[in-house]
Amino acid sequence: MAFEITPMRDDEIDVYNKICWDAFTSVPDSLALLLYPGGYTEAVQKYMRNNTIDSLSDKSTSYIFVRDINTKQVLAVACWSFQTTDLTIQEVLDKEEKARKERAEQEPIPGVDSAVMNDFRETAARLQRENLGGKAHALLKVLVTHPDAQRRGAGAAALKWGLKKADELGVPAYLEASRVGRPLYAKHGFKEICELPLNARKHGYSRDGMNWCMLRDAKVLAQ
Ligand SMILES: CC(C)(COP(=O)(O)OP(=O)(O)OC[C@H]1O[C@@H](n2cnc3c(N)ncnc32)[C@H](O)[C@@H]1OP(=O)(O)O)[C@@H](O)C(=O)NCCC(=O)NCCS
Image (tube, rainbow, N blue to C red; front, side):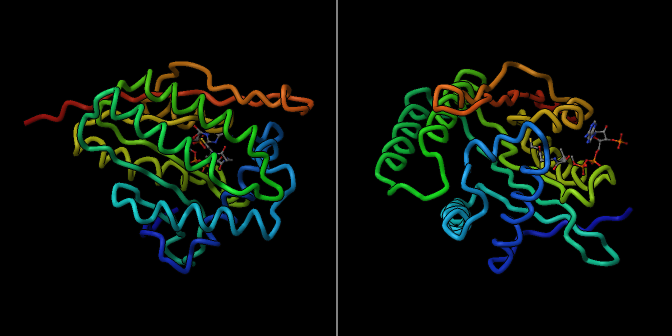
């Protein structure tokens, strides 16, 4: 199948979030259902829309759509972020503190379990700091293929799009893989570094969740 990859348009934000929701909740050990136990309500959709709009102002972030080149049907979406310079550990800690303050100031959102969400974000940020040490990198924040379009290469196309940029920048690539994402990432040179647990049981759920931090070394390009 041939693909077309385009940047997300402003009027496609809801399409992006709906594909994310459909893909992330289609797997049995979905983390999404622990983070958003109330389902895909109006309030959750608004929360996701506002988060996406906020991160659009960050010019280091790219949202991309993968379409079937013939039918133009959206098959997969991804969000990549490129940190092109090294940061000191203090600068990373300052960014973490800013994000923590913003979370603390946020009004509760019906349907969003903010305790589980905040725990998970804290752990993810700490592991990212420990694994990357502030070094420049490409970060795959989100990659999903619509459940009806999986195993046709659309996810790999969105992955390769960002890895090409990472290689041009000469930086490593980092991500937090779901159970179903791991084989795809391993196939493209990512190695597992550690587990990223989502400790939901302590917040009253019947199960915990798990992701895996994965790193692909920077490619040394021939001169
Ligand atoms: C993970 C995901 C993005 C893969 O997208 P996709 O478009 O189906 O992947 P591709 O068709 O490009 O797969 C390429 C290769 O990855 C591997 N792969 C993809 N899905 C796999 C699966 N469910 N089990 C095992 N290997 C898989 C295979 O090696 C596959 O090649 P093959 O089909 O020739 O065997 C998709 O399954 C998804 O959206 N899952 C739910 C949301 C999610 O967990 N996203 C990842 C977050 S980190």
